[in-house]
Structure formats: C-alpha cells, structure tokens
Length: 120
Image (cartoon, rainbow, N blue to C red; front, side, top):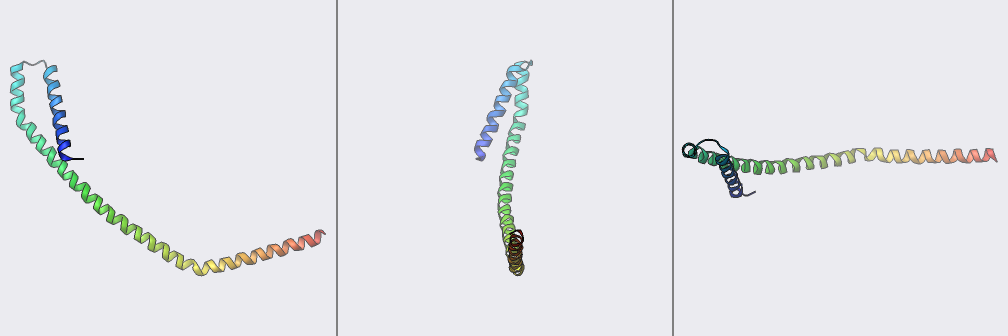
C-alpha cells in the first residue's frame, strides 16, 4: 500500500467525519469555528504522527519479511539435512527388513504348499 494513498484516505475520512459533526452538532457556528481553529493544530499533529507510524510499520513489515525469509530458509535446510541423515541411518536396516520380508514370504508360500498337500 502506498503511504500517500493511506495518508489521503485518512485525511478524507477525517474531513468527512468533521463535516458530519458540523452538520449534526447543536452548537452555534461561532463556537464550532472556534473549536476547529483551536483543534486544527492537533489534527495536523495527529496526521503527522499517523504518517510516522505508517512509515515505522512499513519498515517493521519489511524487516520482518526479510528475517522471516532467512529463518524459513534455515529451517528448510535443517529439515533437509535431518532427512538425509535419517535416510543414511536407516539404509542398513532397510536391507535387513527387506531380507526378512522375503524370508517371511517364502515361509508363507511353504506353509500354503504344505496345506495344499494335506488337503489333497
């Protein structure tokens, strides 16, 4: 979002609010002009503070996104490294498990053959 468009939006909103207050207030025109005159400096200061806060917010978001990218990259690298290490560590067991599965299949086949012989 562009800072100037945000600032103009806030300015238009504040102006619309001030106009609506002018039309709905029961005070006299002279009294309203005095209030506006006295509070115009406060409004300008508020607008400046808002612009400053928007600038600070923008800088914070930029900093956060930059840091977030770095952290996400580091986390992904660590996860990838852990997966690679885990795969290396299970490789010997993987072969042993595959051999055991083959042995179990052979045993099951032998049992099925024996059962067929007995039932014939």
